[in-house]
Amino acid sequence: MGSRRRSRGGRSGYTLTEMLIVIAIISLLAAVLTPTLFGQLARAKAKAAAMQLDSLTASLEMLRTDIGRYPTAAEGLTLLIEDPGQTAGWLGPYAPNAKAITDPWGRKWAYEARGEDGYRLISLGQDGRPAGSSVNADLVAER
Image 1 (cartoon, one colour):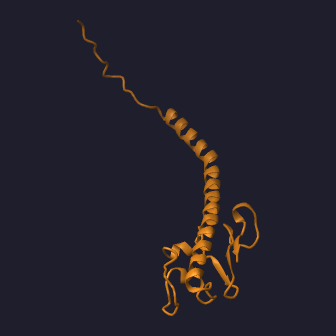
Image 2: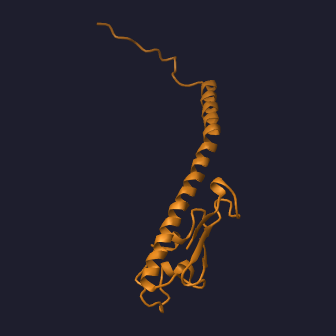
Image 3: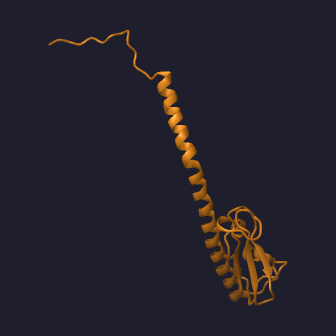
């Protein structure tokens, strides 16, 4: 039974050319995939905002059931989180924390009181400007 000897002079490894080719391929893949991933993120935030709008609407309805009215303009959506102390029938909190009244882009939902029987909730979308389409579209709920 013979044994094989390894040559001590030959070294295994990658050449600089091979490393550069791998880096170039990874860079090309990143350049192609990055815009797609950011587009997915923007669409996910828009969908999250729509779901959050539904949740806030439900929270406002629960609040109205308990206190008999929607928040005033001065109280705003903060009434969903904390009672200022004078609201008879308040059984909240109706939203878990301040983040619940902030849209996915980090801006507070605009709340407009329309008397005791109505309100308007608005998020201006990703761009923060009125109108727009796709992820920049305004999200509005009115009662």
